[in-house]
Length: 94
Image (cartoon, rainbow, N blue to C red; front, side):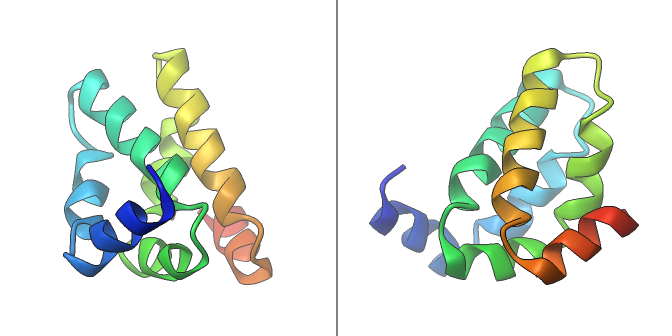
């Protein structure tokens, strides 16, 4: 997603519903939600919204998912969020 699309997703309030999909029983939904956060997390303004929406704990949990693509997307999302020192602390605590 390009930068403007990432801003629109944030501005329209789509980040909190995506967080709930991280805990879905469907591997496919987990994969797509984690992938969305992987790309949305590249935008600095989105990082704060993603963290405040509670995405870090479910993303950390997905690192242990059975599906390797889910693991990869969750790891990529956390990597983008970890650019911020406070987020690193949040990830360690999750």
